[in-house]
Length: 301
Length: 320
Image 1 (cartoon, each protein chain N blue to C red):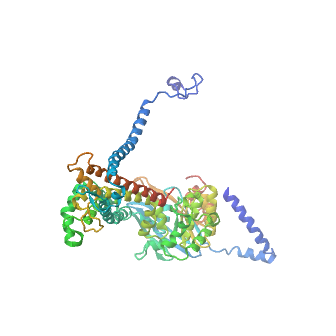
Image 2 (cartoon, chains in turn green, orange):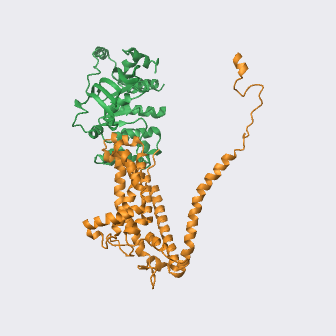
Image 3 (cartoon, rainbow over the protein chains, first blue to last red):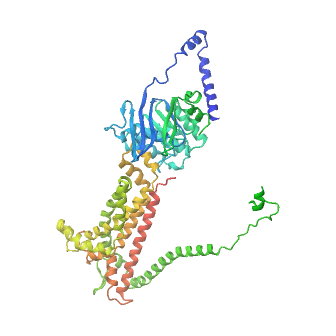
């Protein structure tokens, strides 16, 4: 429902623009001519290049052999049933998996061509550039201001006041909290807390924001706000979002990857496998793999 | 259907059944008994505290009948068993503060350091070994620590830093160090528990912003656990002030009004232990003195606890 109404809104928004373009015959012809030579959706710049990436915890495989590219300034969604390793895959992208001692990453994760797991790469530096927003809003038990200022302070960045305001404005939260910056962040609603966490990530000026099911703990209205925010954010950031909400992936993302759980009945092992990765429209309207079709049409899962 | 008719089925709504009663099916005496027992457990500690205060108050009142309040509190000479007797409590009050201070000076950094290491840096394997060892250290009888201080620490420290032990083998500083050894596991263990109780999500959030491990520990985990950490410090402080055996053995028994760690001092607890085990008659001024000093000790720890509660309320970071 939310998705439908939003589509209508965007259509309404666009209509006057097209009218203002003086619907002359020549222009219409030129538009028609331009249509077939559509821009290749994969031609843009890439942030990540995953080559045969597998992740395991100890001896058990969690994600098997994923190869995909993640474009810059777009929203890329990872969808799939529980246990398909989408969060694990996401956490590879800023080396969050390093915090789990038994985790191991095989294959190559290239960030602008550099191997993210190269020997000289500092995970702390990686996480400055590739921020993360978590499933459950996790503000620090500090004031709203101190939450956003945390990153800039530990990194020794200047002009904290300005940065905090900029981040809160960027997260569409400034007007709601500007009069209570000194209040504890836990006094905010869940949706506000999650947008605060997004602001906190933006305050250190990353290039990529990873979001691990950012709306699963939020009500539909807060979810809509966070989704609107994602649409604005992709101007400045590249976003990778894990979601088990297919409608959400359809609403917010440009590209979608679908993962499933593979099972080895004999050994009882389960791991995640990438099935299909394509433009979001194609995944939802014209999937190439029958398993994707069953999932997105609601036949399974 | 046949089986159901013969066995009968659940469901109170059948036409042939009377409406159910809402009254209790039994008087439940056991429930009342347990409730009474639990309440009396809690009340017992209140009664004990009150009894201690009253038993302290009566002889203390007798004491202040003979010795002026300001003479006691601000007097700089302590010689209650001499003639002429002097009842200035400052030397033994300073003795207590001095040994506790040296003890805390050693134990707070060591204890907090161990706690941060245990909760944030140690591998599960290392933690599994170190934490129980620390907790065993907390269980060593204080008299053993006192002996260790007297026969081992004191000569060793005298050899390295002669200024630390003026009157071998007695020294306030060495007594403080021995107390400190005893306090480290208290601070480490409780602070470690407090820091491990901080939700993992906060650590992840900090790492996600490009924090180093040290920043995560000091800027996020430590402040979030501050109420537990302060509780551990207060407990350690109270133990330091109340510690008797170690100071009796290591600090000597000279009521010197000094903070010099090399000097021999008499603490309030050591005075009480020393005097109470001697031959004194009930109702004498010496007898009353013990209670007056005990009352002062009680007031001192009470103030410390009130102060600590205020501190915890002020700096506590509430999550969820």
